[in-house]
Length: 599
Image (cartoon, rainbow, N blue to C red; front, side, top):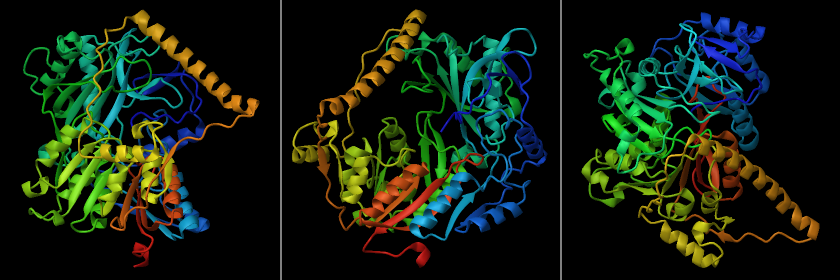
């Protein structure tokens, strides 16, 4: 959910300051429609922080009525961006009526036609200043002040990898804009070169900026939030012997940024608007391709954890942690989820990330040694989550800590036990939705046998093997041999080899698919494993979706299984300005419960 591109075909462009230029040097003429839209949006007064009301867009099943509501809605109000970068930046797809967008209308149509939901509500909060984490690309662009180039930070123009600077982005927390300006100035003084994806040369590839509120306050509520800075450096991960000093220029840049907090020595940079640097990290990424970060992180300066309050829980984060960019909208969804969990229930959460959902539920559990007071078990695939989760868990009441745990594993490897041991199941999968094995565990269906099950061994043996792997033991990470740094020529050869390998693989796949048809042979059946129906103990499934197409698929599978019925659904606008909706749905067992809208 970082850099986004809509894939539109556009002429190659270069960004110079707040202007966008074609490669020929001629000014890029905007279409009259987009230019007029931008001028109208720019006239709107940007709402002050905390001033925007939450407007719940009730989308009814009648299309004509929906259009009438949209036609009568004001075009210049608290739900308009008024961003000066909208015409060129790929970050937002809409600048007005941000509480009414195509995917919301698709969601309304789906729930109305497929499930008889007459009204589907979607909550939209502040549309400016909500983004507390941003990933910005670093590239060299023409410098207005001289005939040379400068390092700039920003997003890519639509349909290209040409950088557009966004110094006045209105959706980002203002301190993120200040941090980007500070880093660009520090790079200019230090002579840091940005990454060139065509040659693989350069030093700074990306920056990841996260606003951190004081004393655990939610960052979007703190206008003076500090910023956690992560520099993505074009270099291999340091070895144990060399340490981070193998990249002295990265260390020098990090120190320059950190020293801006005091700015009391000659050469120190005065941070814009009194911005404070919370901490500085370096991510080591010399891979070929568009991967933004690697698994290799080094903490250099400042506090290791950035703390954020969610309900009554304090959640620790590092740059490697998954964090919702819109803390306000996420907190609204969390409050709703907590209200949907039965008191003192045994809760299993899959795809937990850093664990803010489970931790906020744990903070409400009855204190005491009695296990009947509820429990929370979170499952997350990213190993770095174990450290932050343990730090967060330590801040819960001591009697509650013993009933809260995290399993580092793939959801598909532990879904059988997660279903068996829970009263309430919570899933917050990525945009691809639930994996097939988790769907099978929830519906009593059949899923393909995977390597984790033991390959082509018997189904019974594979199933018991998977169950054994689903315990609370953390899987040991695979230790890879350290690689020597690649030369520029070696990187070029690697890129060519990767392209040739991908081309050969696609050709081989086409031939393999066509071969059985030519010879009249049937493809061998893939081994499968049958899951039992979920136990009666599991009475509620709470699904927070960030990919609506995948949610439709999973929702249909859950209901068609005869095990579940949809009892509640609502939406949250996590990314105002984009065509994206977060869907919160509640499924209760078919034989129990009534729809929340029927009560």
